[in-house]
Amino acid sequence: MTRKTILALLLAAYFQVASAQNVRVFPEHWWAGMQTNQLHLILRSNDSLFGQGAVTTGYPGVAVRKVTPFSNGRYLAVEVSLDNSVQPGNVQLVHARNGKKTIVSWPVKARKGIAGKDFARGISGADLIYLLMPDRFANGDPSNDRVAGMWDQSLDRKDYYARHGGDFAGVIRHLDYLQELGATALWMTPVMENDMPDRTEHGYAITDHYRIDARYGGNEGYRRLRDSLQARGMKLVQDAVYNHTGTYHVIVNDLPEKDWLNQWPAYTGTSAREQALFDPYASANDKKRMTDGWFVKEMPDWNQRNPYVANFITQNAIWYVEEFGVDAIRLDTYMYNDLAFANACNAALLREYPSISLFGEVMVQHSPNQAFFTENHIATAFKSNLPAVLDFTALFNGIFPALAQEPGWYTGIVHLYNAMAHDFLYRQPEKNVILLDNHDLPRFFTRMDGNLARQKMAYTWLLTSRGIPQMYYGSEVLMAGDTKPDGLVRLDFPGGWPGDAKNAFTGEGLTADEKSMQDLVKKLGAYRKKSPALQTGKFMQYTPQDGLYIYFRYTEHQTVMCAMNTTKAARKIDIGYLSERTGGFTAARNVVNGREYSLREPIVVPGQEMWVLELK
Image (cartoon, rainbow, N blue to C red):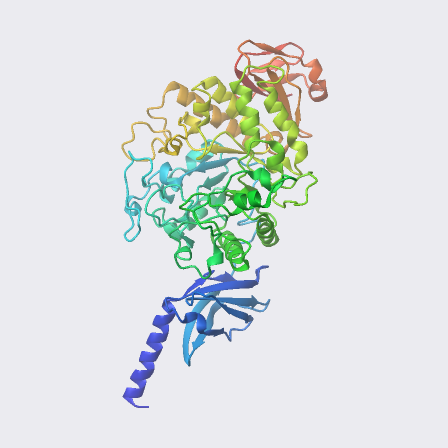
């Protein structure tokens, strides 16, 4: 072989590899031994004629079943199957066109963890979720505050729409604090790459489904956070967005087919009227507007009826659990998804990870509307398989009016009683996630007009009621803010940045009220960690009397009585009327201040207080 021939072969090999480097595969790798072993790989190249080629492989255990081109010549859909014999390694996908072959490497990896043990463990009433926005919690690594090549280069803490520099390193640094509050699970707003020109602080306009945002620490930083959580026995909740994406997403900017998005002649937003999905009198136009309308202009709506789109999203959902050790998934804007797709995606995740928890964001005002989107006892044509939802109706129609209104036959505390009574609609109401506020809602302290007593009652309810409690960062130190504009409910956590005048992590600079609130959360959080009654116990409530609402959490071995007095006057607990749950006990201990009371004597709860009493 001549030197000229060798050089020609080397050049040919170089150009093949170089060409392969311009090919992106979604999902970018997979694992041997998965239940999900029939995949739609989406291959994208910068070559406009790429779609005219064929794809084959000789890798043992991997078969190419079908290759489908799109009208956009830069894409191919490659259906592959992985049988039980497949071993980890680099699958060589051979793309051939006009006699030219290009090798695309697609790794098949070995599974590292054990689902249900090392990840995908799920969450339950034994957990307390702490929700934070990573950009607004703490800056642990200033070197990634700005990342070259990304659109949004803002870094101005005075501008609540700019980036502020919070990251995974900052979260890791303060996991001790989360545990002091009693938190066992961490939920962050989406951490996938959001390479948009502005408003990237919230994370909901995803531009790359297989990259964690570099400004938080990237894929490796996310793994370090996961490892730090697992080392403490804590869990990781992913915020997943299936309904829409960002306008700067690579696929949105270069669609394989126009029908990958729900297209309209002009921008058309969703009606946000969920009633159209179950209303027996609803029009087809209303249903379409609800599901196919875009959330906002910057967030194009996926057409989940397209099987390639549905598979792209579902495979990505599974990939994230396996890749990053996710234990639970919060499903953003759940009611705007195509419901048939949502059921199929849920089923795929639960088939792969039977112990994982899924709970959807269904921000509605009424209990039947909310229950429709989860497993329920309602006789409707569509039956949801979603195990749980964020319980907004317990907030909107329960705890908020219970504390904001004067008690009456139809007002005040009776609303919370009614909200809990509506649990008959759900198959598993104990899986619902209860909350007081989040990044889309006014801070609860603001809704309570800065009333500390009401804030304390609300948090006492949150940490003792049925369901899985979710706290929003900073509310435990009375952070305030309304949603007009929404940046006011997404301010920086005090102490997360060097030089902050107030530090909630150490207590430096906190007012007496802020410290008192934080101390209450810590005491209740610590108690519920060791209380089987509050974690997984049954729930029994009594009809409110004169503004006094009493409920019990109990197991065979522990009974906890919770008494909320929403009036300004003191109220006496009628122990005799509660004998169904108090019988056999002679004393009660206040779990917050340690005081003990005899059940043979009247127990009086002061006005605007809620007591948590363990019976003895």
